[in-house]
Image 1 (cartoon, rainbow, N blue to C red):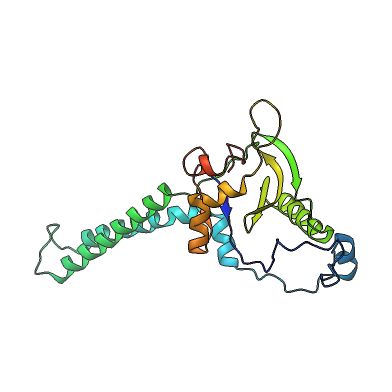
Image 2 (cartoon, rainbow, N blue to C red):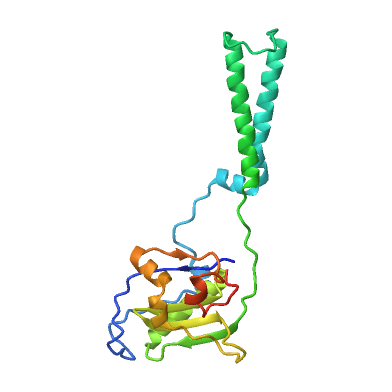
Length: 237
């Protein structure tokens, strides 16, 4: 199993001050829809194409086997050249031809071994699983409508274009959002609520705050994910 990552970013927000329901200083947000973009046309930068990279990705097996074929052909060429050149088959250290043949054979064998290593090491394919838990949508009650709208928009975007099925937002020790799939609390059918104070005391949170980098968890069933992230489904990838 594989768990997601936790990101840290500085947000200039002080939750201790009450939020006005209609803040005048809050920027205006513009929504983009597929229909409006299709009418006006896309004017942004177009992604560049790498023909070599695309060909390698589409012929992965052939590229991984290529060093084996090159090394095998080189080895046969060296042996054929040794046979037709009339030189004794026994290697002679004083002969420049023998030294060149030994070097060529070494390179050919190295190429074959490289191909075998490439075939044995392959990226792990992630299988899609159904999270074990219950659906939940819990939002902090005193957030302004504009912030709630942005959080819901972010969740809809992530769930639509990625494999994300759970989203939890905790900022400055305050639990703001929990949406998507969550772990089930016993047999009650209710979602496990995020304990922000307990999360801040865990090694995952402290490590992220100290390193200012994301954190990768290999398995939620193992520690520290098992004890510090109980609100996520147990089979989260």
